[in-house]
Image (cartoon, rainbow, N blue to C red; front, side, top):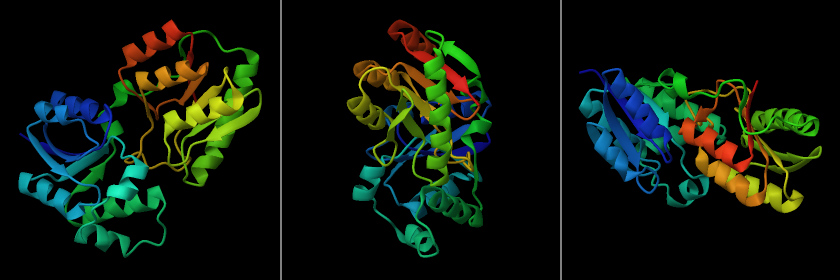
Length: 267
């Protein structure tokens, strides 16, 4: 059976990728990040090994021993935790020593190039996840009001600028005012911060960076984000069409409808 590697982070995306790969008849070899990846993933794949953030040589060894020549990255790594708990090995030092920029995209492209130089091609997880990418239009919840549509448009413009700076993917807006921009804290904390400043009724926009390499850091949204929005009274979640993964889409749609949150796919 042909094998494919999976460099797994946190959340449900590694599960979605593994299931999609298995559905295509592939044997999935997982390098899972300790403290990030859900241990339950081990039960769903044929080969499973724990690694720590920064153990590049260790991951490559796992894949080489399994005969893997293609691999994908799926799931996030908490930025704050990564900074505190990274255990860089000689492979990581090899990559870092060549970097001119430590921005996310530059670092991840350098990691991919190092893997490819050693016979392991890094592919985009979207190659396996087409069925769970965000479609266009109103997906659940009430239709947007004109003021909310304007806030979505503003959020999209600002998200492009935020992405060009390679900072984050999420913007919180209300009544024409930008309330919060995502940095290292992640989507949920950005939403909380924006609502703390602007109160209930906020609009949340999440999209890829303009030059996003879809092999890395793919935006993903699941029911947990809706729970956070409901807690703080945010009313609209706008996601980029075709480049945002919907985690547990049926639960996401049902949750948005039940909470009266507008879930919309925008270009």
